[in-house]
Image 1 (cartoon, one colour):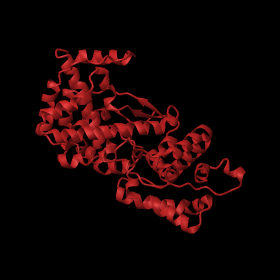
Image 2 (cartoon, one colour):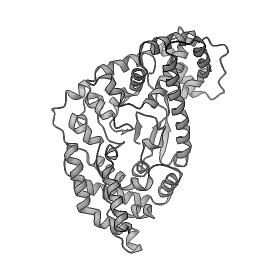
Image 3 (cartoon, one colour):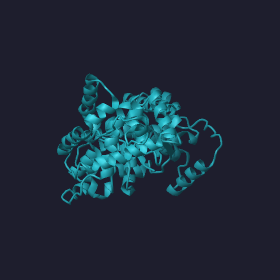
Image 4 (tube, one colour):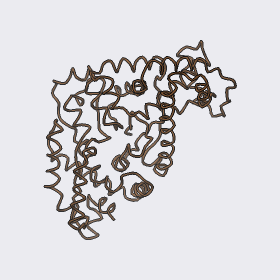
Length: 406
């Protein structure tokens, strides 16, 4: 199972529909949002809004922007969940992860930021502020609310409270007359002394230490590569030998670039198409996946993104353009547009998926040069499929592209 991490999938634009096909052998794991446990406290966060407005602190506008970001995140997350529901259990599974979002987690997040050579403003441009707003929401309205409800509880006590809540299915009783003063004073410290950008950047770091124990991950935010490659312990390994971008990463990028035009952006039609392929065309997916591995071997060892992208482009054009044009039966104008779109969107080269090893432990995949190419892997890969007779098409490795193009 491949974990989509560290962000919650709250917007369909975060992921390519090709991911659900390429990794169909074992469903992708999507993490539940940080605020999923918030309301089990019985305290309604929305009651805090009129309380703050009545007090009218100098930081009210910043707090309102934060709450607005969280609300937008929440609404989009629900819509995304409903959109992808037909693929649930088949293409992905939802999991809940446990990590520290309390005061100790806040401290560790600050320490992690201090280890990065980038300045805070630059780091803030690399995070997802909407996912970060949800992390900050959980920090305030779950962790801090628990502290207010159980002022003498230890860390172990909170762990037990969480364990019991997770194991119990009953309607949570609403807490009447909750005293918001403790939360207000804490927010006064946060929003009164720190910019919203810095607060969101720090809250976004809550999940980052989990990467240290992961061998593989589908990175949900390509911008994190720059952050990770500027951490002290990663930079200390920058001079070590880098063996090159893993073949399976290149194969995945080939697959994504070719399949993406037919399944992105994700909408109801694309989800329906993906669901049908997963239930009825698994053999075609497997053949295309294997073909992508073969094509990846032809790229050769690379550790420099600037030389890798043009090399893969030339590799694709040399190997499969003619067969792809023949396969899709496109007129010359349509085909030129297809190829132009395929190679011109530089953002698409920053793949949302990559295999990363030992990130926070200075793993060799994440050197200054290697990390970028491992995540930003190029390519539009080849779906070379000859437009043969129906009998030949049935066993051809590129049948999937033919199917998608109809």
